[in-house]
Image (cartoon, rainbow, N blue to C red; front, side, top):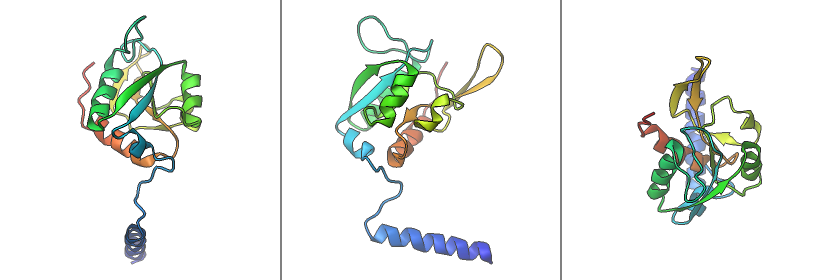
Length: 159
């Protein structure tokens, strides 16, 4: 009975918030709204097959390809920002990037600095350990994260 009351209370709260014009999930900084039909600022860190940074031209690899497809769903153009992982995590924390890629695993040390997507594919590293791959987003930008998660979960990542 307690579970039913909790569920009803939660539903009532959700309906109350929705009728007040509050949507869930939210982006406190408006990331999804800003990048839709705008510019998606993507930090890129080189990492074998996931992200390659050629001397000239745009990033290549599995993750830049996924990001291009995702940007197309938002009618967004991409601004690529190369950097080391710690620089990208810092840029996410300060709102200078919308997304960071670089073959990150779910056990990334940047979890305190950034939000992470749900794992969208798995690989095995040279030690035989499973690596669950994620992308990084600004902390708290949950509507943007949900949109990216839904996109990534719909993809079949070929390695």
